[in-house]
Image 1: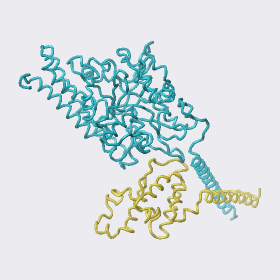
Image 2: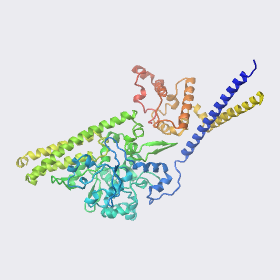
Image 3: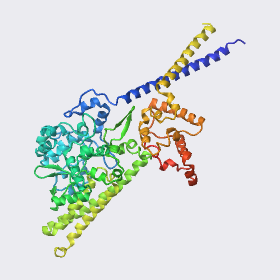
Image 4: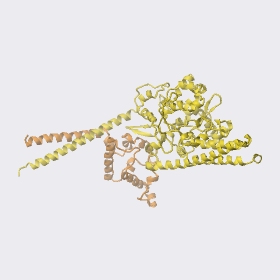
Length: 463
Length: 150
């Protein structure tokens, strides 16, 4: 026997060991480089490559300093459905009047009852599911509502980046600029704006701190705080950082109306934020959005009162801000950033919900959908009840009943309709405050049925 | 090549490989403040940025003045403690280098057991009389935020 098997075995051993040591070195270097990268990221949260000022409107320029936030911001072009919300891309043949080749699905076609609800108002002509922030300006410019009604410049308050245009129009005075642009016809005012909501609408360009730039909210929250006994509330100096993480969204996701000839955008909050407070406000102001074409009732249109409804819910009570769920924190390397891809939390359950709720994604999603399903059922009951009332008033009217004898039923229609629309127009299908949403719909059903009962009572007895 | 030359060459390769890996390992250890992980200093756990939020939440928690990270996240006993540190150290390095980890972070069952058992280190008198050892209910099912919010 010679010694050859022995060196062979030891050679194999040595080769194996060499390979293992090499792999260990590779793993060590990978770890080392990773730590190095994270340390560098941790040292500099961002690099200032351009100077931003109070007149830098283009988000692209801000994006040079904040590429990660900018990338996410640009993702709001997505069109994704959830069970009860979200938009679907519907192809459309572009025309001169409306060059869009893709729009969202029509809500009027989905539910014909909406046309009766809004009979005589521009919303009965064209009402589509809202798309992401990226489309806010385009979708307002080209909605058919523009062709059936003359809108004021006020609309731009929430459909464009208006901070810089307001400051320009007011020569450095935000409120003066707001007042000036409110009064312009929309078709003229639209030439003053360029972008949908941009960085400067929520951030101070020097410190990046959140700030409120919308006069409607500055004045609305001041009126609301005054009703709570807080005088001269200045949101930009008196709100906490966590409050601002809700208030920046509440600049637009609210109920509003245009006050007076000046078309001043006003948030109806001086009695409070609940639907009852807001309805009472409109009663006191004797305000109507339009006269219902079928019944002759002076009615109101509620518009996306997300901020108000959220305020009545458990998340608000627990101090959870809009941004916590709609722009949740996420890790990018060593950094923690707010996800600027603003969207439904149902499309991001992991970051949006699981940070606090330690349940599986399926479980959390189904909890939300149970709440939304119940709200949707109640919404349909309330809608049918209102359709019954509208039909009855219409028939009584064509049957020759006097305006006086219809007044009570019309007043009930006004209230039933506003309460229903408050939840219908709100963009969470009840989730922002589940019990409150169902209470409001329950009240709406009651008002509709009381309205029908009012028609049956002879006028003499009612007085 | 004679067997002797062959062996010399192989030994040189082996020596270089082992030397390189030891050298890189030692450098990484020092660069990553590896020594600090052998201590009980909570700041060491936030060497790595991923723990920043947990660390700052602990600083504001009710337990900050009575327990540091190691009191709850390592078992008692010298060997068990350092074996846990070694195992977690390896898997954390692996996960963060490859980027293969869930966000928000999720504690693994073994580490959850350690944290849960750690409650008894101080609260045994209370928990013993409750008879909730084992089973699906653990202390942190309800008291999940006593140590830190996140």
